[in-house]
Image 1 (cartoon, rainbow, N blue to C red):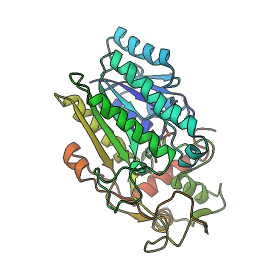
Image 2 (image 1 turned 60 degrees about the horizontal axis):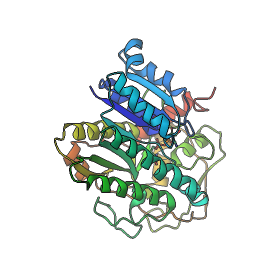
Image 3 (image 1 turned 60 degrees about the vertical axis):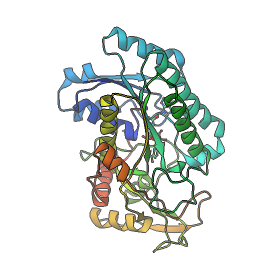
Image 4 (image 1 turned 120 degrees about the vertical axis):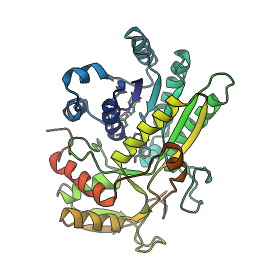
Length: 353
Ligand SMILES: NC(=O)c1ccc[n+]([C@@H]2O[C@H](COP(=O)([O-])OP(=O)(O)OC[C@H]3O[C@@H](n4cnc5c(N)ncnc54)[C@H](O)[C@@H]3O)[C@@H](O)[C@H]2O)c1
């Protein structure tokens, strides 16, 4: 059992990962500002946790606050030492993730994603905690690369969001290069996480404008939105719509547990970037047809103009991740559509009543 700080642990990927880490017996400190999540996640995770109320109270500590708040982060490290559960590693999810918003409000994105990360690693250094798993993204890759992408494909993000992710990867690389400090670092480059916990109790709960395809699909299927707007039907793909590499959120959560275990067991410093993907490309129309078929529903849709910044095809190889972490995705597109739709049906308004 280890003590782990999880930033952004109330969010979509963070909440699913926290549940798996709790089941593995880890002691968690979670910091989240709830800018894109809800404190109601606590009650849901507790309901899913198999070891009972007392263990949950002991292992799960959620602190509301911002990763840019130096005093707060430092106090979390201090109190972990006082409680004899000194933080050994960090999983760093907290950040803003809309490509479009990052273009409209770049200074906010640099401040939260990069400024917040600098604040975090400075305090980690001070408290001798030098193990970190960082949430990076497929957006770090150049749009000129051929698919499947591999970890050594060209890095050249085409938007501010992707630039902030590369900058944090570079920051972590410079820490790894400090002689004698022994940083252990994994950047997980996620492709397109969708789906939900099979119970339907936790899932993606975006606040404000929906930017990702799957929550949109869910809302059209449930009648909350009139139709799915598909951005372009003239892409150079088999059916003219964009191709992406969708990965089940439960598989993604498992990858975090394995990445953490890998680093904690590692006797010396390390720096790795790993793709978290299935290696399979699925077009938007294919995903939609799958969703309709496994959930017996109809999705009205319209084609609209391409979105600036989109690319035709993005999928990647997970060979390096599989051989390093002994991870491979266990769930398929049908599982993603069934589990994601169950979450929507049970929680039409997310965590709000
Ligand atoms: N979901 C995706 O498609 C995807 C793909 C690639 C990378 N990522 C990255 O993975 C991470 C997690 O993504 P997610 O999908 O779970 O998003 P999410 O928005 O559901 O989770 C992020 C969490 O961080 C919190 N947060 C944001 N700013 C904060 C701040 N300043 N201080 C404290 N907490 C803050 C939010 O409230 C939220 O709970 C993000 O860094 C994101 O950029 C996500």
